[in-house]
Length: 236
Image (cartoon, rainbow, N blue to C red):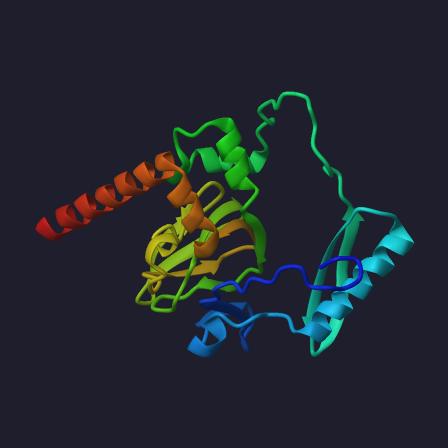
């Protein structure tokens, strides 16, 4: 939109999964009905409200603001407002960014091995922090899922058919297969303690694979290892 409120460009995204609050706490993932998959999220009235909010933030806090917002019950809420710290471009040569703690964890995930520091840092920016309370179900066996999680702190339990199979702690990860086929979860993951994770969704991951041959190759190797392990288990 321009400052006058005129829509300059509008492109609907494909929305296949909805994450909703569960009645017993936590969240559940649901398939979006076909008629809503390609529907625009915001109507003209909501866009006008957003334009007015952006103008108010600029008037109160100064130019070049980065805002986060949400509509709930038809009401627009301002969640966060901060200065844009990297507006414009620099003529200085780019230097590799210092690896963050999140980036160092991502480097240890086989899917993202053998990548340059800059690529890893770029991928880490796509991961969003997710927090879960003790006892909260993160993924449920048989339910749909389209997200990969990397544990930053805390502990989680893996169960299959109601039987405990493993414990996950800092640096462990789960849901990588969901990044490929959006299929049903093969296990239930429950937070044993307060859990902090970094999450990456299918729709964010897919362009990475399409644009990065290293990730695609790592993905093939991971799938082959899983296939060999499954064959070995069957033979035993």
